[in-house]
Length: 251
Length: 321
Ligand SMILES: Nc1ncnc2c1ncn2[C@@H]1O[C@H](COP(=O)(O)OP(=O)(O)OP(=O)(O)O)[C@@H](O)[C@H]1O
Ligand SMILES: [Mg+2]
Image 1: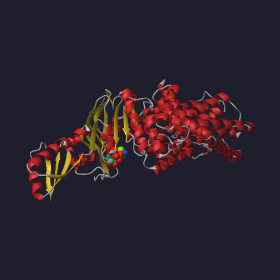
Image 2: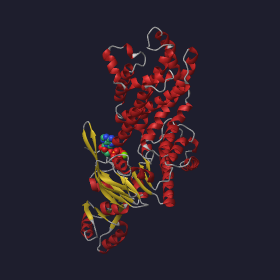
Image 3: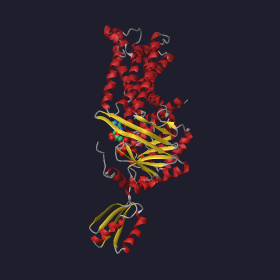
Image 4: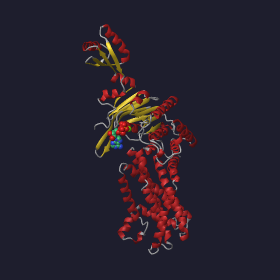
């Protein structure tokens, strides 16, 4: 299928230079490990609403945060190619536009998945119970969600092509409240009513809840269903907005 | 092959609308080599980007190889190659990898793309740079890579937006040699924009001149020069009186214009000056007027532009709004 082929072409083009500078990926792993080492010990004194090891609760949230922050700002990497004309070069080829976006998003997401797997492997000896298949499903959900967010980020980069500051401002003022309202780091059940209500309007909340459910091995739950739906909707909307922005902008 | 009718494009900017292209109609037949000439900001790139499906026009219609650009952009993209004015290669990617990716984007198989990439690297003299990051190339090398990218799939219609800008004379000559040969072999239709007057003059069969978003001339370069500029003849005589009587006789020459006497000099503009001049000098001699020196200035496309707009292409930077 042309779409899959184009996705692979785009992914491969972007991945090759990344693999050449693999040390960035290694460096990227250090940061989440730092969070785990310095933050999790604090969590033991906070009721997370779940029995057992706080890692089981914290790790999925942290991986969601990792994906959100990386994908929200990945449009930045497109700016250089937008200005130079090399993005335009691909738009002049018959390649499918959504495939170009998906390929590029996957390049951002692939190192994150590697990081996630390593994090899981590293913390397993400290009490994280492994549920391999549900966790894998959790990563797939994140992938779908990440493609959507990355596409939105690309769309934002295209729309604010001539104004780098605008990109930075918008992407951060979206990502930070999403994260804080998503109950990524602390449980929303502890929040005052108004904050809890607000978090219910945050798509990220549903994804985080789905991931937490999957990380405890529970696949057939309402949280997982809502989370999966949310990830699918975000991906569809992202690709739609991305494709339309490319067409409208007429780079 | 290429047809545009009444294409317009207006950009919205904070300072107000910019009418980049104002009613462009053109037709290019299969196998033609057409040069699009015009000063900075004339609307050349905007026109090319509309023809290549990259930019939706504000109004008007474009057809490429029988496909409507707005309705069937994918079919158009399959037919064309596009070398934009900017840099096509990505900074962190390797030269050969970029060429192969380009081939794959046009649905070439990996081995075919790899073979073609090596061919083009040799032709455009980029072999020593093949395994380097594109960011490390010199400006001219980057430009040659851009052209190679546009040629990867041997398109039927090739759009080149200032392909030779930044190339040294050797690379320019080499690039042209290759383009001309490719065209002979494949019958490719080529549409290019350029600032180099000599390039348009020598290479193109047809020159379109654009200014302020409008096409102001479209013909063979020889014809444009003959019709719009003509050959300027300058003659010197022994006296003002002789120059005066030569001016009288010059009025009878076919298509003679801009006849002016200045001391014992006479200047006039004609078509086909080279074949007219010997006869004219002879005629003057028969009537007792001796020509002391004669000089013909063959027109350039710049003279054509000058006669059309009153401005010289060599001097114009950004046109006044
Ligand atoms: N994205 C844009 N937004 C606003 N104005 C634009 C945009 N692109 C082009 N223009 C304006 O449209 C006009 C035509 O630009 P265009 O790039 O087509 O000129 P050109 O003939 O290719 O010039 P050059 O020889 O410098 O490449 C210019 O006045 C330019 O400032
Ligand atoms: Mg231009």
